[in-house]
Length: 168
Image (cartoon, rainbow, N blue to C red; front, side, top):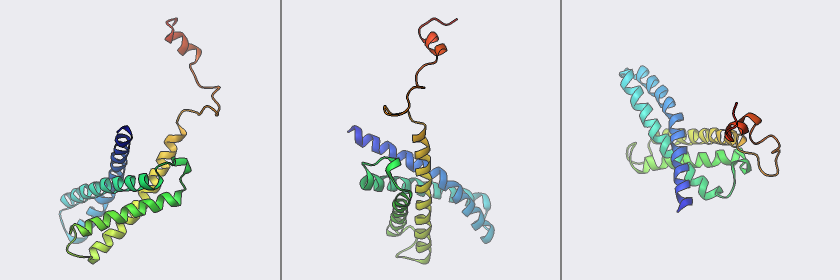
């Protein structure tokens, strides 16, 4: 049960991270679309930002699930960037396929559907690469292992004095 909760928390966290990255891209896309087609910029920009944010969340959770199934036993430092990006592209492709299957872009595979699938695949690959970079940066700040250099870990003299109640 605990492992399931950890994976769920990780999937939600990754989904939120992707949503935060995709929403500004949606806002820019909405602004450009509104400017070119003469739509109200504020409404179109906000709608696209929300839509891309939701798609980013779903895409991030799909990617997390795919990654967990395919690479569940490996840590981030054991994963090669091209392989990680490939899993992200697959997650994006699945997201685009789900959108088409659900009929969100009309019935069947339309030109718009193909563009959305391509964009979701590209965003998934880029988001996966960014996620790996962020995860590896977080791993670098982790505590040193038992075999690593642990001579400098621990309390300073001032911290030890304050902790033991001998503060001056």
